[in-house]
Each structure stands twice: as structure tokens, then as C-alpha cells.
Length: 533
Image (cartoon, rainbow, N blue to C red; front, top):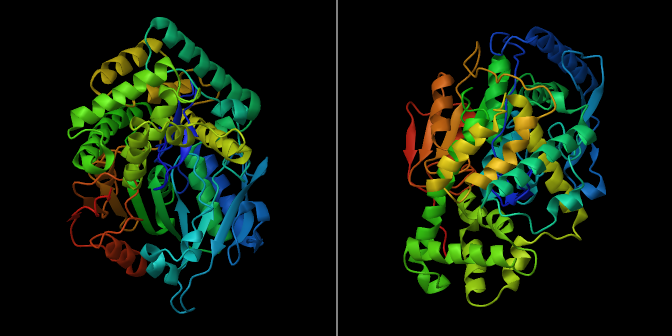
């Protein structure tokens, strides 16, 4: 499942294609650039050299900043441009691709400026191009950082405006209703396996030349080339969700190139977790956060009338699910579409009230609100293309970053067992990732994330009950990056902590970005305000 930005983003759930939202975590493959011992030894020296050649070239070329194209929906004073990178870093003079970047200058004085802050929102498959709008929209949480830094966003390779990949026709991708992700029979499983295999084949047909190169280490190398093109000696980086894994791999490959790094809602960087096990761990965490939401709904029964206990709210959910399975609501919303819509609540606290409100209206007899919220909009061709592209990149990166189990018996056994106590997300997530079992392109060995020479202290921020990137991931990265500090938001579980208002966290992020100083020890913060009904 995908780990994305602290904002609802729905992407169709892969293969079998239960339409499911995007929070994900995503993958790493192989090889270091400045630090050849970090990878798995498959020619990382060539790639390290290739990255250095590409960075030197980009430093010379710079970026030709212009007003952004009208259809990018990024108004002045945001500027846009492109950075050229090799498709394959082992062949730096071979085929090149262009990566879309944008920026807004720092809001403070020349003396206050500390360079560029680059951002990745997650995915894999998320676009960072909206990042500069945090300045134009006068986002108060980021106002202090904006005084010191140009805010720079980019579309990673394969995403959006950066040599986008595709695996299936976008209108087909979003069509509903899709099959219930929870199988009733062996025949149901066979049908989902066929869809997953066809999805992998579609990726090869439509985007085959890109697939072997859609890896986290390559995106980390791209990040270093963008740094050079910006004229920055060192990188300042903010990564959320999958962006934390990108940061972890960058810090391993280019430890001496990091100036400041904030990672928020952390993918577990252990090689044992990338990516198969990480997705199973997600299913457990999602069940826990789903229950947190149900407790909140029950507490606010005076508003939602969905029951005064978690069990009562769950019973209403199961009833809704069964109804939609028998007769899709409005002809289009079945169980797959329901999961896609409802999963935003365990992702983000900001979706708690809106999700509960739609549910409440349905139970009171208004089915249209649910159809409007959960059904695809076939007239939104641009949005559908974006969803399909996001899912294609998610799949391509996770499948290429690591070797996945090819035995269906293993997938079946693991997910059947997990589903018993964690039914909310398990099978939907399994089908989303199953194309990796028959992936047509080379699969790498994940980078061994660790501290290298010159890596400064990294700031790690994590909520304790995060569903998309469970807390253990932050603990693991903290162990691997010596001198890092971990801020834990206790009794909270929203995905993407740094953009929420929390007086214990926001000033610490500012202080680190502005001065480089970290607390003398790890910090535990009280939770941000609970959503109001």
C-alpha cells in the first residue's frame, strides 16, 4: 500500500485493482554512489561514477527556470524547469530522461537564505511539485523554514511530468465496481492472480524500457543530480512516508552530501522488510488505527449515530460491506471501492470527520454522498491518468527494489493467516502487490542503509500508531543513522506528522532546519489535537 502525503489521495489498488488509496511505502534497490560498500555489489562502482558524471554535467548546465506551463496549475511566482539524468547510471552517456522540478525563492532576506529544501511526499509515485504552494498558500507551519529556504519540488522518475510510466489504460484502471478483495473461494483467488499477472505484463508492454531502472537508489542518484543542478554543495531534504526511505538510501549512498535531513513517518529500511514484509506489517498497523477511528466515531455518536461502541460501529461497517457486495451502491461502489474510500481515515486524522459524515449519511438513507465520495469519476481523465501513473510507479519501484516471493503458496499462507485478525486491509494490500510475484524486469537487492562518513545528525519524526509506516520503522532508521534524533508523537497515529500543528514538534523541526541543532536526547511529544466531529 502506498505511503504518501498528509492529504487524502486515492489511487486504484493495483492488480486486481481494488480501488484503494495511496499511502505507501516503497522500495529500494541496490547501489551506492559515494559509498560503494552500501549496496549489494552489482556494479555499484559504475553507478557511483555515472552519478558523479551526471551531477557534474548538471552543475554546469544549471536549470533554465521559467513560468510554469498553464496546465501544471502552479501560478507565479513559482517557477518550473527540467533536470536531465541518465536512465541507467551505469551508462551515463546513454539514454537520458528529463525530470520536472519547481521552486519558490526564500521569503526572508538574502542574509537569511540557507539554500534549497527538496521535498518528496512519498508513494512511491507521489509528485512533489505542490511543495512550493506551502509558501503561496501561507502555510503557517512552514513559514519559518520558508524564510531560510527556497522550497523545491520534483516529480521523481516515472512520475507525472518526469518520463511518466503506465501499466494499463487509465479509464480501465479506475472502472468500478471491482471484485471484492476478500476472496470467498479458490476461484476468486485465481481470478485475482490472473489480474495481477496481466497487470505486470501491461507494465512491461507499456513501459518495459523504464522498468529495470525504476529503483529507489536511482531516484536517490537523481536527487543528487538535482542538488548539483541547483548549485547546492549539500542537500537539505524533507521526506515523508516513502520519502523517508528515499532519504535513508540517499544518506547511505551520499553521506557526505547531506546538510540537513528531516524524515517523517518512516518506512522500515531493514533489508528484511523491503518490500514484502513491510506490506504485511502495514496490514497489522492499519487494523489498529481503524479501531482508533471507530472508537472516536463511537465517542461522537451524538453527531454520527453509528453506535456508542467500537463493536457497534464495526457491525455497521460489516453490514455496509455486505450490502455493497450483494448490490454495489449506485451500481458502482462495492467492497473494493469502500476500502479505498474508508482507508483514508486510518491514514490521516484529517479524514476522520469527513469519512464518518459520509458513513453517517448513508446509514440515515442518503446513498448519494457515498457514491460521490467512493465512486470513480470517469469524466476526470486527468485525475484518472494521475491515479494510474501513481499506481504504476508504486508497483514498478517496489517490484524492482527487492526480490519478492514467487511462490503463490507463501502469499496465500501469509495473507490468509494475517486476514483472520486484521481483515480491514490485508487482502486488498496483497492483490495490490501481487504483480511483484511475476514481475518481468530485474529485481535488485535493497541497499544496506547505514551511517557513512560525513553524515550529519538526521531528524526523525514519527507518530506512535501510524498505520502506513509502523513505528518500528523509525526506531530501525534511528539505530542505523548514528547521531540521529527521534521525536515520537505519543498516542497519535496520523501519517505525516510535520505538517500538523503540534507545539512540541513544529519548533523543533524549525530549529533543526534553521540552526542544524538537535535535542540532546530523543523527545516524546503529546499528540496533536484530536479531530473535532
